[in-house]
Amino acid sequence: MNRPIDLAALAAAYAGGLDPADLVRDIRASIVAGGERPVWITLVPEEDLLDRCKAITAARVAGQSLPLFGVPFAAKDNIDVAGLPTTAGCPDFAFVPERSANVIERLEAAGAILIGKTNLDQFATGLNGTRSPFGIPSCVFDADYVSGGSSSGSAVAVASGLVSFSLGTDTAGSGRVPASFNNIVGLKPTKGLISTRGVLPACRSQDVVSVFAGSVDDALAVTEIAGGYDAEDIYSRHAPAATFAGAEWEPGFRFGVPDTPDFFGDAEAERLFHRSVAHLEALGGTAVPFNLALFQDAAQLLYAGPWVAERLAAIKGFARTKPESIHEVVRGIILGADKYSAVDAFEGQYKLAELTRRAEAEWARMDVMLLPTAGTIYTIADMLADPVRLNSNLGAYTNFVNLMDLSAIAVPAGFRPNGLPFGVTLIGHAFEDGAIAALADRLHRRLGQPSVGNTGHPLPALTARPASRTGHVELAVVGAHLMGQPLNHQLTSRGAHLVCATRTAPGYRLYALSGTTPPKPGLAYDGEGAGLIEVEVWSMPATAFGSFVAEIPPPLGIGTLTLEDGAQVKGFICEPHALSSATDITVHGGWRAYLGAQ
Image (cartoon, one colour):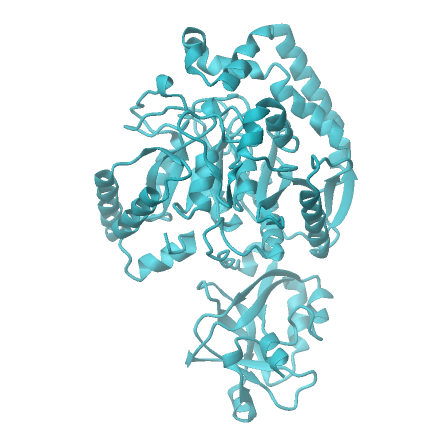
């Protein structure tokens, strides 16, 4: 695939006349051409895909609202799709469901197109991606390294640019670790937010459906459509109205960092984590050390406690009658659950309740938690040689999250010198999904990742939010108010924070004004300018906006600008009379570039 297929890019392409059928043909051709990383277990037949394209196109023409019109996605192969086999990574276990999982039904009702079902660690047991008879997916940046699991194929499909988003499942970190290893976003929602009806359980009381995407915006948009109360799912929950609302993280917010982090000898991962801490501090946060051991004690309960018995409960008939059909490592874990008794189960619950209560004191000192998504990454060869211990290391920062009923989102956080990616995770309380996503997006954009996965396509521009929803005004600045420029303090002193760096839509011209102190540019729209002028979007409390505007000298003023992605925000404009004596500097593409050329 040589085109960006994030949600905004696809919406623009379809508005410009792209036929969904042409897109799915391109995707299938790319899948056939890129078979070196075994991503897929089952593909939707091409004829069925083309019929699906015709159906959603007809529905759209008829006026049906389809917020995910023509958006291609993949689903981990422990999620039921009517008419396609569910294998859970075990051929002898396979069955063909008559009904799709609730999450598939919701996404298809929104116009999304399922391309196929993806590879996984068998029965979703593992965090590395090597435990599958369908082949071993690998990191998109180096085929010698693990892709992460158990949602291995789902992550690689997004990171390779084959789908816009994908579904994984996450019990111990399976929706986060593969995101870290492939330079994409992994959103692990609050338990019960997305129905698990139609999902083969790993640990039924702890499972969630997770979402992989190139950006936080896309992951959150998909999660909001995929989520919703489902009376057929005994673990489904009614989400508060504010669950998906963003949050304005004002300066002084506290983020927890582990007091005794372990990077398993990976010095570059440690360096990148400390870099992320510094960037979160630059966004106004205060780092607060917390007692990591307490949370890791809870994590131990998932695999070294009675919750392993849930894995056996999910497939007990098959596991006891056909144990030879199960991957050796997976079989040892699942059948090992026979040693746990009902007494062990209750004692495990008591221990978890105790640890969760003790954790309240840690949470009282922090608003959000920042962790490495995984402390290191391993080669496939090393993982196969030491499958249990190394897999356990990958879950050091993830296993406790569902047990303690927390929300989490993993974002890219840079690259090691050898080209392998690193990621961090922000963790919040239940139903803080939108709030932590807002902060994660700011961190992700500040870290300046070069592309989505290994596609070469840049991170999609942020869709601006109106002040009426957030209590803030989003303002595009183009010159002396840019970060590092002489008037930037007029923003920061009013509590404004940087949302993103982006560009204007075409049609704008930039001028160097004469006789201004400090030197300032003027931005004007005439419909003919080259546009794509560098701007920064800042979020300012609405209560401070009036005093800011009062400081703006003529010939400048505030109007409405259109950004490269089509979003509209408030921004600086220049009165036309001042342009006659100004110098057109549009060719430089921005104020900083112009100053540099002087």
